[in-house]
Image (cartoon, rainbow, N blue to C red; front, side, top):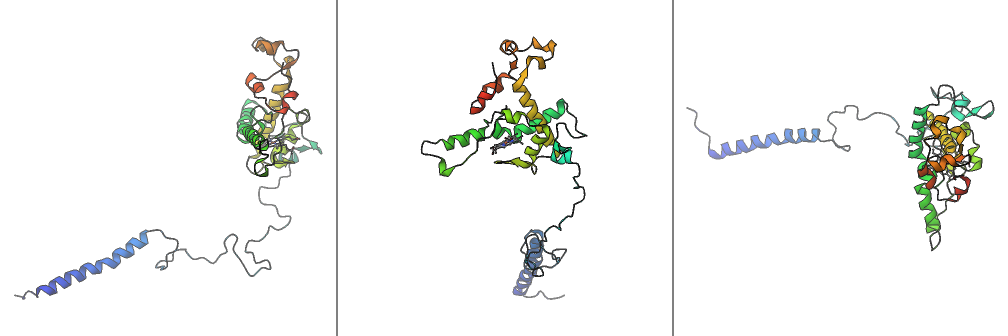
Length: 258
Ligand code: HEC
């Protein structure tokens, strides 16, 4: 029979065996924890690749930038944009008066335009287009503060879309204004999709008609259904009552609400 080793030996052996289990446990734990700055790389995977990141430096070029400017005259695939009507709102050298081929003016198109207008334009121009959106109101308030404009606030009043000059804009010009902006108004080409910009332009014209329509624009069979005050107005009819009462700005004088 093998004699039992002394107790201290068994004890030391047990502690050593337990201690040996610690390193594998630590390694497994570290491997399983994500950390972008792990100092020890056991498995390289594809963590190190010879490449330049955006905005990085590259001494090879005189300007020291790794990111190279676009080569002049190069057109990216799918960005030829030769259709001036579709992309610029220009047809035959003039602002287009029709929608580009492929887009159809129907209720769905106008509803889409309305939805996009309410999201992107109403904050300044107001839901009915009188230039009385919430942002505009607030800015005008800050401007007319009793102690003068807050921190030198400057604000150009958002135009009423029922302004006589704006009413004359063709759909192509409206599209171009939405895309590239005009004077103090920024363009929305980067935020709003191409077709949606046309839908908004079409909806702006619908809004304009809503405030300047005559009884002759209403189909005879529907005239009876108009509210009395609108139907009896001699020619000028307001779109919907709610829209008309939103008028609070100087632009009110351009509406012929009777
Ligand atoms: C941040 C506020 C703001 C937003 C949002 C905004 N606009 Fe304007 N818009 C203005 C201002 C301000 C002007 C007047 C610019 C000037 O006269 O310098 C203007 C002018 C216009 C005009 C008149 C251009 C002319 O010929 O006088 C049209 C049309 C127009 N905006 C349409 C739109 C449409 C459509 C949208 C939504 C895509 C939109 N705007 C979004 C502030 C805004």
